Amino acid sequence: MRSQELNGTHPKAPVIHAVELTSTLDPVINGGISSSLPDLAAALQLQNVDSRVKEFGQGWKRALHRLVDLASLIQQNDLVHIHGLWEPHCALGSRVAWETNRPYMVSAHGYLERWAFREKSWKKKPYTWLVERQTLNRAACLRALTRTEIDDYRRIGVSAPIALIPNGVSIPEDTSSNEFLEKFPELRDKSLVLFLGRIHHKKGLDILCHAWADRSRRDHHLVIAGPKDSPAFRQIKSLVGSLGIERSVTFTGMLQGGMKWSALAASDLFVLASRGEGFSMAALEAAGMGVPLLLSDCCNFPEVADLQCGWVVRPEIGAVAEALGEACDTSSSKREEMSHRCQKMIQDRYTWKAIARQMSEVYQGLLAGTGPIGAGIFN
Image (cartoon, rainbow, N blue to C red; front, side, top):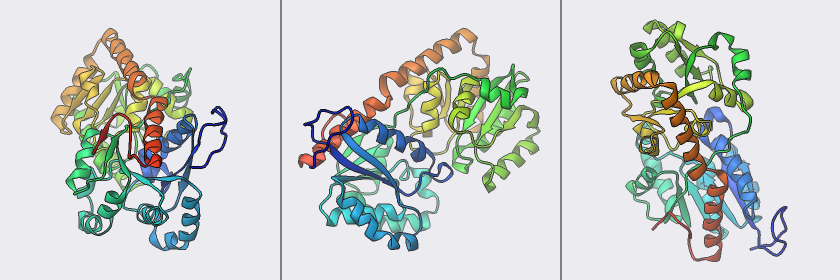
């Protein structure tokens, strides 16, 4: 392992040089990875890990032209952490790391979740058996965001050790609802129910809209925040029209940066009725802002119900509608208690400082040749 002094580290401490490899940080394409990966890399810098994010791009033709650059990048680092599956960065990055004797990790980020695996299964299944299983089994360690993801790895016959390390979240200070409500003044004095994420069939927006049609109130308003340039968006907008709920639904488009945090600050409830998730960054961000959650049980976040931070239900119209009704009837005092519990849950379990410490321990074990170390290791 090479040594180099980083700001804030002991001058004699060995620095781990790691490359965090992904296909793209485009949030429309890569969802939670695009927001979690830069924050993970920044937090690792404070744990004596010189961690750098590298976007390799998509498509095999382009990837093969960049193979020499990829090999050079990997040889300049101590280890490789591959984020996401099914793309050239995973197959080629793991192969180069294996051939150059660099330990590598893989984080599936929900790509093996049952619902996601069934989508386009006609090509995912053979690719898994021919390519991805070897990639995963050769890994020095796999990273699972949830206990469900551990089962997903094992379900496809992968036996490599697994470290259970969820995503973390960084909550900005002094965030207010002003920026969001200035842009959408018609939402002032409304109780806002927020969906924030990609507009995709798996996110269960059709379920949410049908449930909203059953349980919406005059003083409550549904905000759907996500990109408007997809067939899925057009389908949901058409559904809202056919259900006759246009007056109680606002499509904001994609919200990023301060506007995203301001929207969360303005909201009374965050809803994600997803048919399948890895581990939702948007749900973590909402909880960190003290917004109670209404999630499907496919979001793999049982603490929300266990710690009384919200509702966890099946991704079905009736179940979501009933939970919406309960949430809308919740008194302001109970909602405030729930808000405090949400923030405490994040502070106790999901800060990037704690997550980066766990990841750094795993990296240290891999480079020492002892295998992954730390809490939450499954062999």
